[in-house]
Image (cartoon, rainbow, N blue to C red; front, top):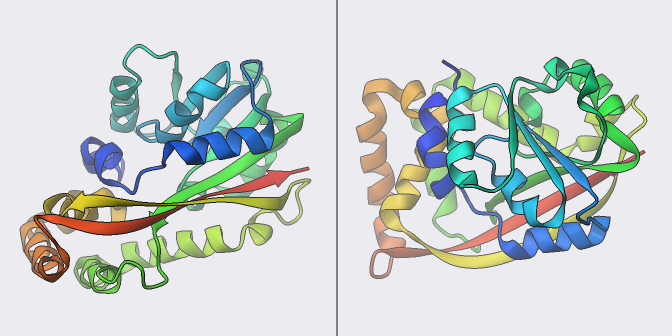
Length: 254
């Protein structure tokens, strides 16, 4: 069982969502059409694959965690989505090329050299890679966020928290990740939205991160949730908390 197995049931509903405006903006920027093909590496419950689905013809999602693929299959609910258990480097050689390769918050779990080599084969000659993320704005517009993350850090095993930090650093420095390959970051698509999230749901969001999942915390889960809940109480109104979300797609091309 992988480190994200215990997060699969919650991930789709509790992580900061990608809004419809995000998918529309990226699709327009890249000129996607029903003739386009997309493969989503580290698809998880299929958030990116399903979000971009209406803008392309062929959609493939790849993930090494069976529980995540089950969640994606359930979320697809009749929509056409091909799901493959595995990683970029284990994909069959005859899978072909794609007009767009999407990767969410999964790049730091991938073997850099093997992934870069496979991307050379997966991305069509004039295709693109979109490194995507959706997260709570960190500029003070979410006043509850710093304390929330500090509680997560305090309860998380040190090694797992460091891995999470490494992932954030990789996303901030994609030029370093793609250095030495034929790809380079070009432009950034950024969409900001506001919504209300339930206090209980926001507290449970902590369980969707590998560093503070049920598998990572074990018997400390309920104690952490109590701490997070107490922290969030002053910020709620009628049980809901305002959240500003930033959704980004760093476009990478040859």
